[in-house]
Amino acid sequence: MFTPWSTFFSDEGRRYLRRSIELALDEDGPDLTAQGLFAADAPMRAVIRAKEDTRVVGLPVIHDVFEAMNAHPHVELLVEEASTVPAMTEVARMEGPAIALLKAERIILNFITHLSGIANLTARYVHELEGTGVRLLDTRKTTPCLRWPEKYAVQAGGGCNHRKNLVEMLMLKDNHIDAAGSITRAVARLREVYSPCPPIEVECRTLDHVREAVAAGADRIMMDNMGAPLLGQALALVPARIEAEVSGGVTLETIRGIALTGPRHPDFISVGRLTHSAVAADFSMTLANA
Image (tube, rainbow, N blue to C red; front, side):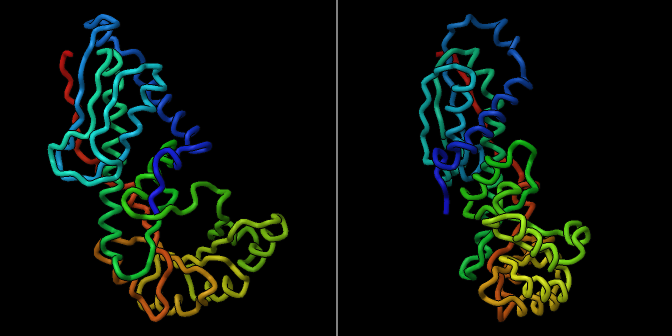
C-alpha cells in the first residue's frame, strides 16, 4: 500500500531525508555563477516538465529542499504525487529569488528523476505479478543515504518494502549461520537474546537448509538463487504458517513464472534491481525572468 509522503517521511524518515538534502546542498556549495549574475532579490519563474510518459514521484521534495535552504519561493504542484503523466506535462511551477531557484534546480531534479525512475521500473514488475497474489519486495541494495526515498518510490510504483534497516527483521545469511554453527543454533540464539524477538528470516540455498529453517520455526524463509525444479521442491517444504520469499536474479521475463511456481506459491519476490538499476526518468526545469 502506498504511504503518502508526509506519513512516510515523518519522524525517522524525515531525519534521514533532511540529512540527505543537506548533504546534497553542501556538495554543491554556494552557486557562485548565480550569485555573480543576479541580485539577491531578483525574481525568477521556473517550470518542471516531464519529458516522457512517466510516473511523477518526489514532488514534495521541492518544499523540503527550499526549507533546508531557508528559502521561501511560491511553489505550486500541478499533478498528484505518484500519478502517471504524458510527455511534456507541467508538473510544478515555482516563483522566487533567482539565486534560490538556480541553486535548488539540480538537487530537486536529481530526486524527482531518480525516484520516478524507480517507480516506473517497479510498476513494470508489479504488472507482471497481476493476478498471482504474490507481493513484490525491494531490498537493502539501495544508494547509500537514500534508502528511505528509494523505498518510498518502490511503494509509489506499487511495490512493498522489505526491512528498512537491520532492526525491523533479523536475517540469517550464510556468514551468520556458519559462525553460529547451524540454522537451528542461530535461530535459537536470537530468540534467547531478544525478547520480544523481531521476525527472523533465513536465507536458504538447499533443500536441507529449508527443512532445517522450517524445523527451527523461522518466520520467513528466503529461497535464494534457486532455479526450477529446485525452487518448486523448496516451496513445497514451507508450510502456510511460514512466509516464503524468492530472491536472486529475478527479471521482468522470469518473475511471473517464479510467482506461479506451484502448488505452493511464494508470498514475496524480492528484486534488488528496483533500486540499484532503475533508469532515471526524464524531467527538465525551465527558468525565466519573472
